[in-house]
Amino acid sequence: MSRVRECRTPRPGVWGAAVFLVLLIAAAVFPGLLVSGDPNGTDMLAALQGPTADHPLGTDANGRDLLTRIVHGARPSLLAGLGVTALSIAAGTVIGLAAGLGGRIADETLMRLVDVVLSIPTLMLALLVITITGPGVFNTVLAIAFFMVPKYARLIRTQVAVIRRAGFVEAATSLGLTRVRIVLRHILPNAFQPLLALATIEVGAAIVAVASLSFLGLGAKPPAPEWGAMLAGGRDYFSVAWWVAVFPGVAITLTVLSITVLGRYLQRRLEGRPA
Image (cartoon, rainbow, N blue to C red):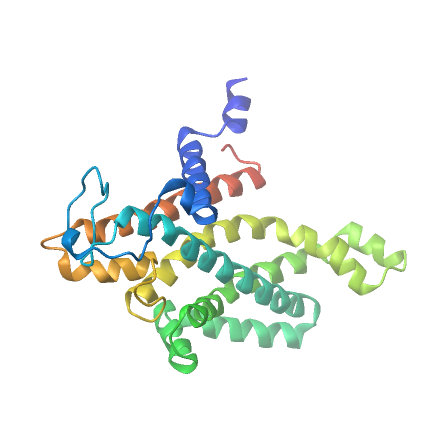
């Protein structure tokens, strides 16, 4: 009985991660419910003030309230992470299906191209794409998505190669169903099951990657309340005002940690292992 309860009841860390992500989503959708004020409103008289009752997380070099900016920064960070994941899943699914269903030549060609992309370091590849397309949030999302496509392409290709030989697919073929219908109704739904857990975890990785490029000045530009840009803006004041850089970094860390915990939990449940 205790074994069954262990499998079905999430651990406290999973509940904590879920609660944090609910608050994060609330901050992204309704930031005005959690904080008041303009995230870009400046007050030079309050510049670099430490945490106080009026400013719980302190202020930055322009006197802007850090708590307000971090709450408002949840939306661009989450949207960037979700955008990267959605684009990479879409492209990876197309490549994986083409490799898994297109025959040996298509499979070998596409998978070798995937291997080439995977052999290039993440940051170097992203910088190369941004050099071609130019800096900016949208181009940053495209650059990170381009790097993450091979992971999904490999997974989809592997799943398709197994599922296409399953008995229910052979039965559907014998009944005269078209290939498109078999792919949409039988192959893709089953191939997406392990993809869900990977995609959940990769949202956190995408948030870190986008924040890293913003930290380098290639993503969101000041005064946008984006966590990576805020972290970059606080590095010059770390010795005299540590909170300007620390709290945006804490927001990134807790977000990625919570998403990873829930992703690992989902992965274990899908695999039938104790959660």
